[in-house]
Length: 145
Image (cartoon, rainbow, N blue to C red):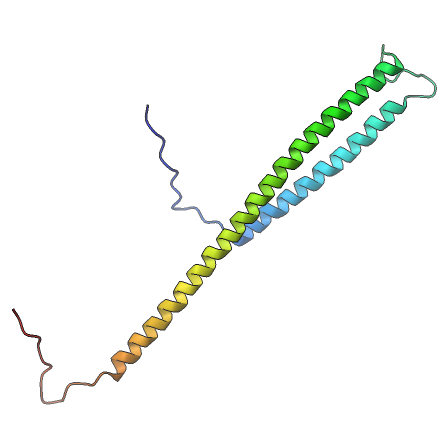
């Protein structure tokens, strides 16, 4: 059995803006889930009330059967909603950590660039301030072994 190596990420670039957009998408998805749940809850409540003209809300079922069916649907919806919210919160947390890490990496690069620029300027100043060799003499050669 051959081992699968790590993916090639040479062309992968993720910006803080991409992560922010992903977090916004998760927020919109969570809002959609909340709206859908609210709609389903209202539908189930209406189904549990029944019809005044006909006590049966489910064809060929008793009013109690319709209530029990709606109650079971409610439990299933509540359980799946809790699972979805848990997954969304986990994903949002991971995105927040990824965004923070990306911002820290970007700051480290900016700091390194500033240090490199300062070092380069210091080297330039040292080279400029170094004494030029006298005009008549060639520069001294280091002794050769």
